[in-house]
Structures are given as structure tokens and as C-alpha cells.
Length: 262
Image (cartoon, rainbow, N blue to C red; front, top):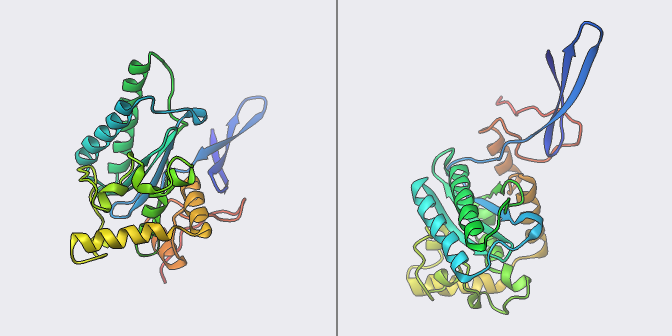
């Protein structure tokens, strides 16, 4: 049996496998999914959806259970959660892992335990999630605060509330001083918004009220769903030098080669 590399498409690697049989050569093409792009020390935007967009919460207790699981496993696997929103059929996180495998281990533990809990509570069985969670690395200076605003504004865009402060299942209330959320680890950029809690809360409120441009919103959604790094060209190039995994879209059918230093 022999393996032949053919090309990498935007979502997977195509590999040709040849089986040498006495009477013929049998070729099979295999599409292997790209591994998730996860690097410690970088913020990651994460989306986990319910299967077929079905509801993943039925009661307030379900929302509280998922938040408790996130808090427990974020601490266990050394992941700093900066922001979140729990919607009826999906949730978003903005988080920075401090170890190479912290984020996938956290998501795996939370996902498995929540499914068991939810199925038992609802008297159901089977899958709850729509496959693997989606994630992308975010350039801190360019997109981190915009991503937090994007996350906070999800319930507004969905028509559930008119103001993000009215939605109970997001991190927004923590950052505008309405409650303390022990799940959260504020990013240094948030601390830099002001010298006092009042100044930071006022600056963050103004930031979210300013909204997110359609261009930024589209870029964040696309990058997360496709697993490409989100940032300027220099940022993406630097990331590529740190990992063998492709971090940006290339032309379909074009072989990928890692940049080399000169």
C-alpha cells in the first residue's frame, strides 16, 4: 500500500492511496479534515452549534449547568475565558488557552458532560452537537474587542432583546458592572480601557453600543466557521511560521508549503 499526496483544499487534504493487488492497482481518494488551529497564548473565537440547529437549552437550569461546566473545566485545563454568549441553539466563547491542548480538552469535557446531563434531564438520547466545534485565532490588537462586542450583540441581532444588557446569558453584564462573573478572566486590553472600574465599564458600554461593522462581522463569522486565522497579513504570516497547520485560505488545488525564513 502506498500513499500519494495530491493537494490541500480549503477544508481538507486529499490523499490518494494505492493498494497493489495481484490482478490490479486499486486507488482510493481520502479527504482528511484539517486539524483545528489552536495555539497557546492567542485568543480564540469558538462556536458550538446544536445538531440541525436544534435547541441545546430547555430551561434556565440548563444554561446555568453549561456555565458551571465551562467554569470548572476552564480552570482545570488552564483556559482563560474572556467572553461568552449562550443562545438557544448555539454558543460563542472568546478564550485564550495557556497550553497547546487546553482548549480542545476543555471543549471535549464540557461537550460530553453537558450532553449526558441534557439527555438525562430531557429524557432523550443521541447527539446534541452539530459535529466539532468551530474556532479561529484572533489578532488581539485588531479584533479582540470587536469580537467581544460581536458576541455581546448576538441576542440583539437575533431580535431577543433591544439592548445587550437585557440578555441574561452573556458576559456583557460583567463588563458593564451589573454583576460579577467568576467564569471570566478579563483580557489585558479590557483593563487598558480605563484606570478605574467605572471608566472601564463606561468605555466598554460605549464600545458595544458603537456596534460591529458588517465587514468585521462577516470576517469573524467566516474565519471561525472555516478555521482560518483572523488578522492582518503580517499576523497571519507570523502564525504560519509557528505551525505546520495551514492558517489561511489558499487557492483550491494548490499544494500548501510552509513559509521558510531567509
